[in-house]
Image (cartoon, rainbow, N blue to C red; front, side, top):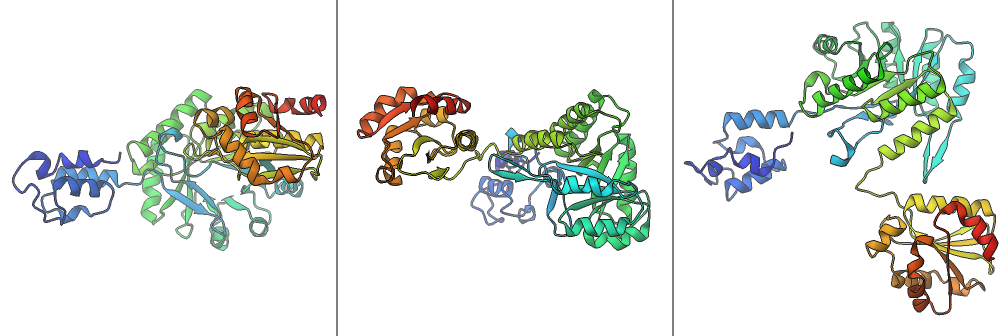
Length: 432
């Protein structure tokens, strides 16, 4: 746990009110000033000659990495680990969980599976997602396959027991899963069903000189309750106790012989508690789409709302008879409305107000969507000169603002739209 300035101060001469209090030998005016800067890592501990051993020990523990970050892929494009909190509301989560698809070089349908992986793409709330990482196993042409996948932009996790293969592919900067001792490999997986065995393997491999580890917890024979308990235990040891043996990202493989619903259920649990890499044997578009949607929700920074650029968006080649709508720049609201507008296939202008990424009611309650702001945004858009239609559809949740907006926008007719975006097509059909 990070030490606060006040916690540090209690150990210093100034906090204990003993001799040498506020001696200024640290070049700070007081012990409190030094403690505050030390907590922010703006000064070094050794500049204070009276730092007690007990505080030195606490500072050493506080400086330990909680979970190492591993960057892999030929272009260093993929990051895992680096987490510092148990839950995202405490601060934020750093690197999203990787959904890796297994490809076996010995499978006859290798190319067919690879085609599906390569061509998968999802766009949601303004973000595009695809499969970034492949778990490559088997023996047939594995070196050739690995180079092909890397050229196509994939990061790799490679399972092999052949030291020569590891030596030839190490320049691709993959993560290697192997039981052989390979000091030339940069990123190594430690595999075990047993948490105590992880410590033993870590200590053994660490002596060889490896620094970057991934813990592969074998969950193939365990009930879900045990899986969650063990993964949570490992994360607590890393984040709260700063145990060196567990300060590494965790990988889990979905067991074979599960149907799509079981795979989705288990993978969703692993995504929430606390797998950094989830390996899935087969690609099913519905399963992957569901997992990436869940992942996007979990790894959205709660301190930075999803938002789009506030401006006037044009749909279906708007002309002087175009419909005009207005909403906030909260991304979920925007894309829900935009999807319905596109499906209507009617020329439309959508005015998106600058609302700090807040939803409609939140923006109104925080004075981020006011009649004055709406009027200003409309005037800056110059839509009055572009359209004959003088009707504006506002969100149904803002029906109480109708009179205010009509007062500000005297030449415009304010129409209170539906509450839900999916009701827009029917509303437009009945009013235009």
